[in-house]
Amino acid sequence: MKPVISTINDIYPAAQAEAQKQRYKNAVAAFAEHFGSIGEHRYFSAPGRTEICGNHTDHNHGKVFAASVNLDIIAVVEPTEDGRIMIKSEGFPEDSIELSDLNVHPEEKNTSASLIRGVAAGFRNDGLKVGGFRAYTTSDVMKGSGLSSSAAFEVLVGTILSHLYNGGMVNPVKIAQISQYAENVYFGKPSGLMDQMASSVGGFIAIDFKDTESPIIESVPADFEKFGHALCIVDAKGDHADLTDEYAAIPTEMKSIAGFFTCENLRQLSKDDIMLNINVLREQFGDRAVLRTIHFFDENDRVDKLVHALKAGSFEDFLSSVKESGDSSFKYLQNIYANSDIKHQCLSIALNVAEFSLHRKGACRVHGGGFAGTIQAFVPLDMLQQFKMNIERIFGTGSCHVLSVRPVGGTEVKVDE
Image (cartoon, rainbow, N blue to C red; front, top):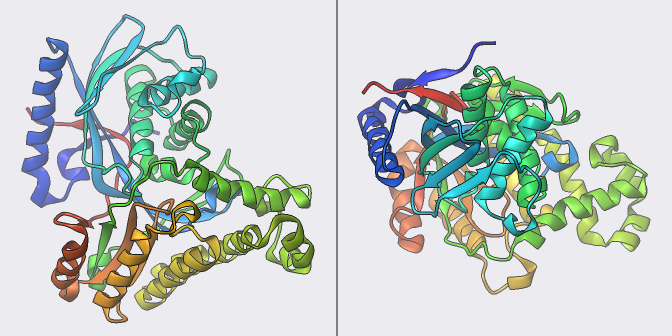
C-alpha cells in the first residue's frame, strides 16, 4: 500500500480545475488570517457521498452501492508540536481539543469537536500515532443534503492524521471504521458504516457489511454520462431539527426483530425467518418494524441486481432497481416524512415534481437518511435543463445539484503554487 496523494486533476472535473486551485489558495489566505501566520503546510480533501442503493441497510450488516462525489471538504494543514488539534471551519467557530484528554465529553455531543476527539481517540485505541495540527477547512458538501458532510469531516480528520503521523499508510477502510466510531460514541448518532466508507474509499463501490471488521468492497466502473444520464441531488429544503429519534428508530426496530431470534442484527437471518413468524412479530413489535425488516432483505437483493445490471451494461435494469429502492423506502422503510410532523412532506413533493418532469424516464428516489433533506434523480441529458427548471421553480435557485462521481476518496492533495 502506498500513501494516496492526488493532484487537482485527479479529483475534480477538468472544467473545475482552475477554480479549485483558487479555492485552495483562498483557504491558505484564510488560514493565515485566522491563525495569524502560516508555515510549512499541506492540503487534504475528503468527498461527500451519494447512496445509490441500500437505504438503511448498513447498520444491520447489509449491502449498499454508493459513490463519492465531486463535492468535498478541503483543509490547509500545518503540523504542530503542542499536543492540540485546532480546526477552523469556514463559517463556524474554531474547535480545539487536547490530545491528552480523549475521553468522551457528554457536553460535546452533536458537535464537530466531538468528531475530532473521537477520531483521535479511535487512532490511539488502534495503536496508531496521533499528533497536533492546525487546519482551516472549507466545504461545498451541503449540510443536510444526504451527501454526508459529517462523514466527510470525520474522514478528513482521519486522513490528516494518517498522512501527518502514520506515513499515509492507514487503510481507508480503517479510517472509515474509526470515523464511524467517532460518530457513534462521541457525536452520539447511531449511524452505519456506509457514509464513512464511501467517502474514505472513493469511486463507485459495492459494499457487503456482513463482517463489519472486514467488509467486502468491490469497485464497479460506471459512467452515467455514457448512458446518457446525469446524476442530480435535489435539496427539498426540509428542516432536519429534532429528527435524531426518527433516524434512530429504524435500526432500533430492525434490531428488535433480530433480537426475537436471539440475533444481534438482521443479516444473521433470512426473509423466510420473518415471513414464517410474521403474525407473532406483528403482534409483538408492530407492523412498521416488520415492514422495515422486509425492506432490509429486499434491498440487499436489489443491490446485487443493480451491480449486476451495471456490469452487464444494462442501464434500464439499473434504473428499474433504483425505482424499486425508492418505492420500498416510501412504502416499507417509511423514511420519506416524519410521523411527528405530517404537515411537512417536502421529500414527497420533490419526488412528485421529479416524476412529473421525467415522464416515466430516468429514476428518482429518497436520498440518504430521509425524513427531510434530499432526493436523488437520474435524468436523461436531453431533459436535464427542463428538469432543473421545474425543480428550482419549487425549491429555489441552486436546489438542483448536478454531480459527477469522484474516483478518489480521502486524500492528500498536491497543489501547484
